[in-house]
Length: 381
Image (tube, rainbow, N blue to C red; front, side, top):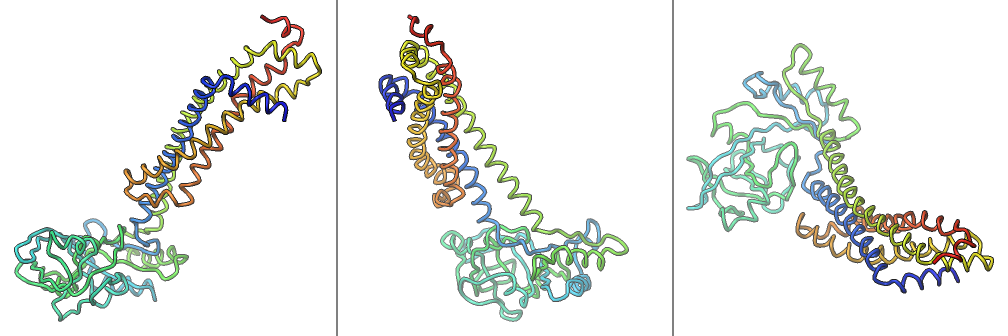
């Protein structure tokens, strides 16, 4: 404890120089933690936006085949190929709509009425029937009902026909199949009659066991593309894995940028420690002459670097929490992401990296002090 007390005394004696070194560590810790939290929050935000579509296979007509549409026969062939898994065909279009005197543009998805419950969940109301003249609206459209007039029970005019909103969908988030939050969902029978179409844009296959996705894709491939490529098959699981890998890379990159500032702070501590050694050469000579071992002198200077690192890391950790809150509130507009364990780990990582950088920066000055010749040190002016 004697050498720790000597280290603490020297830090407080040169408080201005020590404070500047601590500030460098504080800035470095904040940079690592804040940038890491921001990158991780972007990943969490995207994860929340993307709905649970990891069990989905999307089948689309091959380019130039069948006018870019799937026929009823092809949908039936796909259903036979996937066995007990659900096949949900759909079509979509953008359309001008009106509720009273309020006009807007919305995406319209057409799904067979019997398949809608297996794909979309209701927040309120009921599912439309083929003969009921009803439709569903997405959660985002319902939330903006003051602007667009779309709410449960409203009558929406599409072209020359009017449909009644019979249900509001639960928020689903962004998906790679359909994005109903900002859309209107109608029964396919109404869509087919209204637009004079009898084919589909795509088909969604909901795989009951995600471990069978590859087998389902292979079965569709053999059934539909045996002679020529009539459909393309996309596995959303692979897309999600690629997206999340990219967000992880962004997080690591941002944290790396913060680490650079902490390394700069390490250079500052190295300079402070070298100055401390130079100023205390005679003191070191006295300590060595009364029998203090080299390891004990070295430990004294490492303690000094450790004190600077701990002070900077603790202050930086507290400020990182505050900065992280601002980052998540401003950039991703959801401060709750800060309290996710994966975000809080960046604060811990920043603090540990700050302490390690400080101690590492003090090793060479400590070694230099421990290896001074006692006689020459005593004669140093």
